[in-house]
Image 1 (tube, protein in one colour):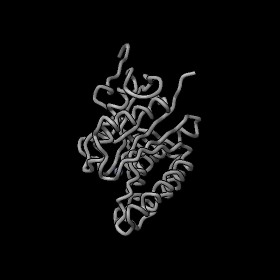
Image 2 (cartoon, rainbow, N blue to C red; image 1 turned 30 degrees about the horizontal axis):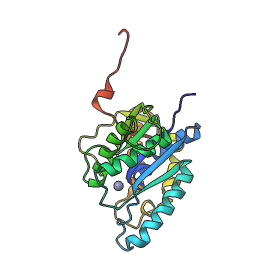
Image 3 (cartoon, rainbow, N blue to C red; image 1 turned 90 degrees about the horizontal axis):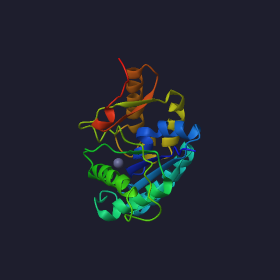
Length: 231
Ligand SMILES: [Zn+2]
């Protein structure tokens, strides 16, 4: 049987959940195996808690959020604001891809005001390639990635054009409940209203495709080609 797993790779715990958690919930409910890989915990992002306190808290929150989504959480040990663009992390990402064997890989868009997000994009891009090559990591090669798509993140707007829309009206409430496993998304950490922003964004994306609520992704320009046999 064809494998349909999804692997969402985020720079920080919370990035993938807040941007495409509804889509992940929908997939998990349909029986698709859903995995999330957090390259760092994002443990330096709290104005009043030290990384030594906030890092472990975010790991706990990531596990709880994954449980609510119906996904499995994986972690790499990189530090917040220090996600590298190195061969080491590309091999580590390739190894997780080989282990999880996803058909769909989701990550950040290529340009971002946050260097960790841009790094996550690059190491995922190379990781998918290296996972498919002999001698580039551990475990059997995996050539089954059929698409790599990019989430809509308020920090990654430059050049982002939504292309692939998923109707997740039925998953909106479960998404709101899942992401609130994070203190960050319950509010009070930053002035930025994450939950309000992404709830409203889903309303906008939904309106554009004629449904109540949707989450959208960018794709590579060469993935926008459509073949038809006749007009
Ligand atoms: Zn982030």
